[in-house]
Image (tube, rainbow, N blue to C red; front, side):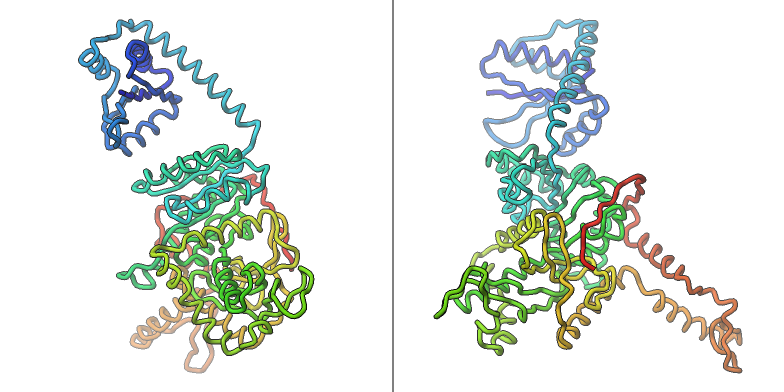
Length: 544
């Protein structure tokens, strides 16, 4: 069987001639099939360029015709334009087109009118339902693959929420993502209104109300720590600028995947000025679930019965596990209590030494142990942890239960404002609230301080402190001035007084902003920047 694809601009007379010839061939040849792709003239050039680039073809005009080798697999074979298709039809089938130029023009105009009417009708049908636009990056990954069913089935975003799913991948992963798309369609989920694969971030993120970033930015063996941090920062800054311009103003962003994810959320926040900062989060649920499962195995209960274990800190770096408030439901004992009855984790484990030593070491090796047994990455649990976070954020969680999530600090627990840090939170429908009434021991406060230092060191690589820049500059200036006998502004004279009158450093913080801007332009010179007026920012309800 021969299957041909005829694509062209809706008003193109040569497309009209090729279409008529193809219809004639399909009518007279039982094994001849055609598929038509009609594009609006405004969209044709972009579509043609992307299609030819993907398939390695050289073709510059309408129509574009190729044969798909469905009997042998692989990509299609380019035929060419209208003239090449006529020669093909004469050579193989002895059939030609006798369509006059005037007829071609007339049919081309009719095709354009029909295309406009069909497009308007389709847009009207789609307007009757307003699907939620969701973008998943690195969508060819196994983590994204495992997320699909829960998301498309309505278990996550609600059973009445239709979904338009955009899968963003690199060009080399396009074919894999097409397979993921076909699998999603095969699931026949009624709420999956649309699914498409894109290699252009702007196309995938356009009008998105939910973005899940799954990019793998693990540190390479040949890469220094500073090079890795700069690479991560530039990558997320680019996302931030695109999100700022193209995403919905109330878009929610989940920064997962591998890499410096807390730093990534921070960089996105810097660039995506129109997105409420509480709408950017970093899931801690995978670390939290692993901590719960380790306790559950120790005391022989279902891991879902272990609650309120808190993960503090840097999701992409150092974290601190806090089991002091953890509780256990459904434990077997001499006395059975009602479902709400629970016991402290520390009482149930009854081995503080294990909790402080072996338990923490077990968690460090947990991932390697699981992946060693599986012989592949533990992507199923990772996918579920992300999906569960989104579900709780969207729909709310059990009343009173504490979870952990990386969110932007407002100075909570002495974590500097603006840093993304994993805190204890509670979920209500559509929002999260920080748990602020917890007592923090001196030991825990010391651990949190160390993690804050770690996060600030990451940011310092991107935005060097103006004080440090000034210190280096002053030391160099002092040495030069001393040799020349010159006066240094802001430094004591020989009489012990300092001349600050003409000091170029003002106390209003302008130098800090200048340093930041210079660093930004150096890190990513070509990232898009844009400002958008008239957007409405919806604040998430938070305590404090």
